[in-house]
Length: 223
Image (cartoon, rainbow, N blue to C red):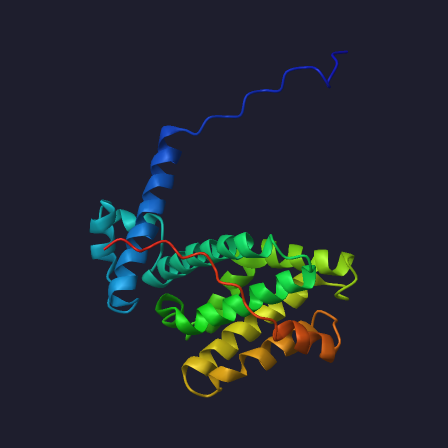
């Protein structure tokens, strides 16, 4: 029998021309939608102008996104992933794994309540919370597990804690932006969310009140 440890592995299957074109078209549509929605908002943007800026046929856009709302969610998911990577550059320097998670959820809350591209999507709260769960979940659940391993948190189901946290963050962000919740209540909000990770109230309060290092700047949207 051949030695499976030394036998050459088959080369990865190359991406076909159609698949490459589809990937490029989808990326171009998201990039164009990001620009136009940043310029005029989700409601005023049209699928036609997004398709034109992406250099994609007006009818073709619906092969990738069934509606403008679906495209807007894809745009927000790209912003969420971008934010996660910016958070990574800061939290990689932290020695306390609990602070990594606390900084992440505080930064998401701050961004959701101050970035117009997030704020205009908050009324679609259930959809946005689900997008947040999917997009930033790999980072947040990893951070929860690291804090559990370090003895800082006590969590038996990190995915459930993260899902609950997503809905709480988006719900509170909407309440803040609509004036139903005071903006200066963010620290106690984060402390209560940290309690869901199994840390005591005093520890949660201390974590939530820690100073926030600056994030690296976000990429500038092209006009």
